[in-house]
Image 1: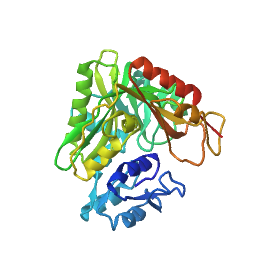
Image 2 (image 1 turned 90 degrees about the vertical axis):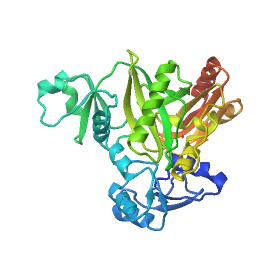
Image 3 (image 1 turned 30 degrees about the horizontal axis):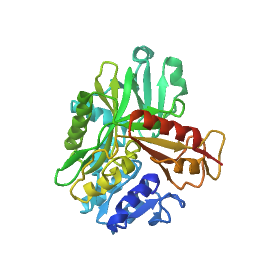
Length: 366
């Protein structure tokens, strides 16, 4: 369910095995259109999801905002739904995520609900971040709260406060687990965020962290997958604070932006590992295939809305180790994800030079 850029790359990853998945997406011009069979319908609608899944043996999703009740019913009828609805129920609601982490002893930033809290209680918890319970993505649904006046700017939807952390680095690990209980993690990546859009500008791997921090992140990812009895693939984002403590930020039960570099940068991509996991096939080795790799989000430039033009694409294609991926979206707008670029290098200076070249030359305008 879902035929956006993740669906497109999922479809690409299974084409070598001649798998022919069917996609459900409300967008008549979804990224995967033209490459696979697409049923156009609302994956948030109960009846639509039931009808879509009625003739399927195996159902998955590339977005959390799907009808959970319909997935539960399909599972009760003997359909395989991976990752399982019980996993999605925990993760699609950020408040539920936080409760799950605390109840099971996982390290995470302090948080509190906002209902029936007086101004003194709220003020004592600041600075903090307000997080929308459901529906937030790519930095949307997250607002920094510095003082009581900032509460007046928050949308009137359910949310909670998360205590601001003194962050040294933001990290992520992709973990996969199949029905047999076989489990694999990808190497830890380090994320660098866009200062205005609040989404990942680029990430790099190996992360510039100690071996101890790398192991801690991988162990926590494995423990999270096993605690939830995950079948499928999950991304876990971490904070590394200034005291070198690892805190779990958020989870996503699907291929994730923090794993796009694996297409060229690792022996197996996150997308092929996803298929291996949900089909109960042997999981692949995940080690890096180049000394260094990075991934840059290709986002719409400010001031441009309309049919996209990829300015500087030829210049990037002329450079070795630069691999653009275009998502096929028919309209660009400021900060919209229009593609990504994987960069591989023989050294960290080589990698950063190529990243800088892409940042300076490849622009999405209209």
